Length: 439
Ligand SMILES: Cc1cc2nc3c(=O)[nH]c(=O)nc-3n(C[C@H](O)[C@H](O)[C@H](O)COP(=O)(O)OP(=O)(O)OC[C@H]3O[C@@H](n4cnc5c(N)ncnc54)[C@H](O)[C@@H]3O)c2cc1C
Image (cartoon, rainbow, N blue to C red):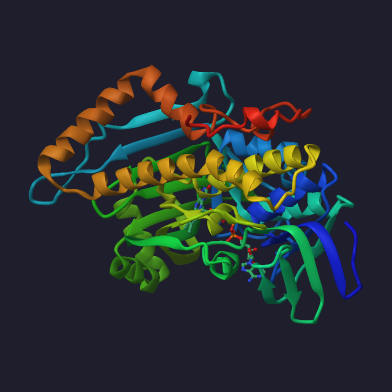
């Protein structure tokens, strides 16, 4: 990593947002000799080995694992901590017409990585571990200059070359500015790229709990009319075991869960979650997040492009948000490196259109699939409930169907960018071969 002290500097690419997606893009471009300036308003604090697991975790797919390995971040992340999960149990909680829960789990589907010859379905990783791993890789790259923490005073995005002006007066220009600044992206707003937003009627309640027994290798997720209830394994710390409770519900119920005393909350958990789960000993931390579907009207204009949550946010019920963001990152890296090799302007509309072609339909499809789950399971109509359960029960008995769903969720099906392949020796495909994965 290099440092800049002069008042004005030009880079090939400016990236606003050194979160998981922005830093991944910086690593991919920097490793191929593209000079990057990476800006963020805050830097994540280091994660001491004996600190409690963080509240914000993500389920990373095999495709994301490959991308992080190829970007040099995974090796740093492994020195911190992560939890592989080999199985995923999913079912719908059934209720009698008068609202009493039925104990039967006949409709449960268990996804097992061994069925498709894989060691794990994915990893539950604290977001801070992923971000710190990527930042460690970025700091090792001489082409990347990290400006963090800084305050961006203004961005000029209508000129031929985009510019970022910091509150201390430093001014930076680039051939391209990438907005990876999250769901409320200032880059998206400043560029006037527009966004379609729909808030879900549920919120996401998250708690870190201490459990008895060792680290688990299975995630549990029950669908209910008010939203899914999930139990995710976390790493052992100081010989104690932990799990993450992710519970979607109406905002009033979520507020109630936040207000309960620790003891009362434990009682609610034991009444709600399956008996075969490990005993929950104590609640370490809890919080709640509003959830919304957002999709930028356009991903780019001349000299500016969006990636990750800045371009789209989806219902997190199947844990796909940052996995889509890493796919954005991998395709954008691929397309920009090809453009550089072909001596094209990195900020030109023709180059950025290739990226939008590669990503928009795929992101929109995943959003629609998540909305399909959300609306279908929220619907309490009796015929629809019977149909869903028949579907789940039959699907659970059909291993080809289950295996296909597993491969899709792991990012092992469909057209993948080269960075998502297991090979560490990436050869970039010719521009003419880059198509939307759905075409
Ligand atoms: C409750 C919940 C659970 C989730 N679970 C999963 C899961 O299991 N699996 C999964 O794949 N996804 C999950 N997601 C989604 C996932 O967290 C996001 O998709 C991911 O964090 C997006 O990463 P990003 O880098 O695009 O944006 P962010 O993580 O939001 O990073 C944006 C960065 O930009 C910086 N920034 C913002 N504005 C400025 C500015 N003006 N100047 C400078 N810097 C700025 C921020 O400081 C931050 O570092 C979940 C989301 C929620 C809400």
